[in-house]
Image (cartoon, rainbow, N blue to C red; front, side, top):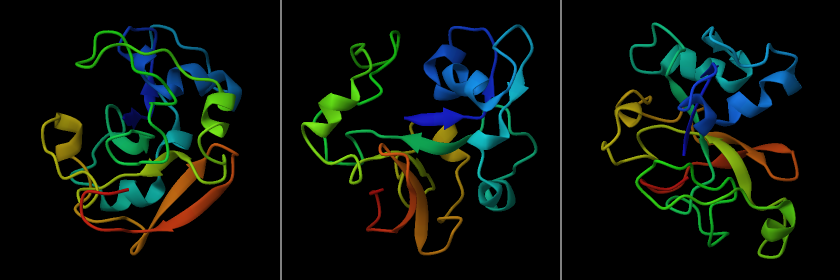
Amino acid sequence: MGQVADYKETASSQQHLVYYLATYYSLPAPDSQDRIAKVFFCPGFERYGYNVTTLAGRVCYGAYSTSYATNLNFKPFGYATGQTAPSEPPHKISDIQSQAPLTDVWALIDVDKVAITSQSNTWEQQLPDRPVHGSVRDALFFDLHVAARKVGKVGTL
C-alpha cells in the first residue's frame, strides 16, 4: 500500500502509481533514469519524516488497503504480481461505486507510525512518528476531492 515518489523503467517501479501517472503530471516517461515526482511527496513529511535525506524510496502516501479501511472488500488498485498476496488486477471505478460512494472512499492518504503500527517492512520504519498535519491526515478520494480526515485510533487510517 505504500507509494513512493521516485520512478524509472523497472519491474519494482511498475508496482507504484507514480510510474503510471508521471506523464499525466507532465513529467518524463519512465526510462533508465531514476526520477522524483514531488507531487507524490508531502512537504510536511519532508519536514517531519524520520531522517529524510533523499526522497528516493521514501513512502509518504498509502494507497487504499483493506488492512486499514473497511469501505470496500477488495483492493481498488489491485495487487502487483510477485507480492506476498495473490496478484489482483486493478478494479473499475464502477466496482467501487457499487459498494460505496466515491466521496467516501479515499484513494491515497498520509501515513505515519500512529496509523501503520506494523514494522514488518523497511518503508514503515522510516515513517514520521505522528501525523505530519497534527490531528488530521490529508486524503485524496476516488471522486478526486482532497479533504482532511481526523486522526483515529492507533492502527487506523
